[in-house]
Image 1 (cartoon, one colour):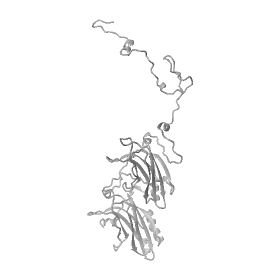
Image 2 (image 1 turned 180 degrees about the vertical axis):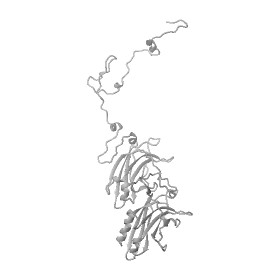
Image 3 (image 1 turned 90 degrees about the vertical axis):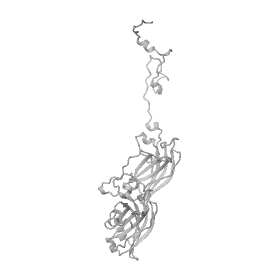
Image 4 (image 1 turned 135 degrees about the horizontal axis):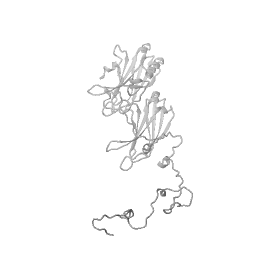
Length: 402
């Protein structure tokens, strides 16, 4: 019906809802319950009738556990697996490895076995993963060990053994092993995938422990608070562990040195063996050092107790195998102190101090015990690992270029 010009047309709600609607029968809208299986009693398809019928009563759905929905498998018995509530940790993948602390040889063996379900990092949906390990706290470049890179895979198999030397019971009690999985990229920077941190106190001497753990996201790390001028050129990002018993005077660790002490009765003197160093701090811009070792027997009235090894080029784990002799009565050694310092050799400028340790009656811990055992057991070669610290002996500080 056409209205006159100027009259307002009125349309009821039924006609308004029918505008721009295609002709044809009206079909019932599917309910959300139609997309789920019905678990209740009654004939199959019941409750899906006309508009006037009441839907059939549904029984509660038996939901699967989250692990089953994610496709995770149950770990094998005996595997060391940590539980994570976050889906992000599971999406990064899992890493399987073994750890063994050999107390007799002071070594820590890290067997990197395999990884599964790593997060894709490349455009092809795969990754080029490798594993690197660090000991915390410590010099980052010095104690880093690394596996080979496996190409184009999310389930790499390495089966590589990485070994740390000079590990003592004190390290096992307070150090943490950081294991990182990264993706190698030749065109840009390598990308971080995930990491695992294992407190070494979980290990028992001479007992291999197996781990199969989900990777976690990277934990932000602060720079060491004890940064000194001798650490130039080093990108140290490892956070120091707080040790209440040592207080605020905690010294920075610069590596390890293996020393041999023996008092020779026939020669009437002290034999000092400089065997090797491990995990020294890097002092040069290339990430390495050119280390050598100096020894003094204090007090040195005649200034004739200085001995020096040869220089080992471009290494953080040098082997010296050199021996020095100090002619002196056994009774006189009870008041002496052996100072051992490690230096980085530089051409045309002052050499850099890496670290040092003092052995004698005024020393502490393993350094004092090593000295006293040498005096109590003459004609016996005693080899011990010692920690190099950032403390520079006052007498040695006056001779940086020697």
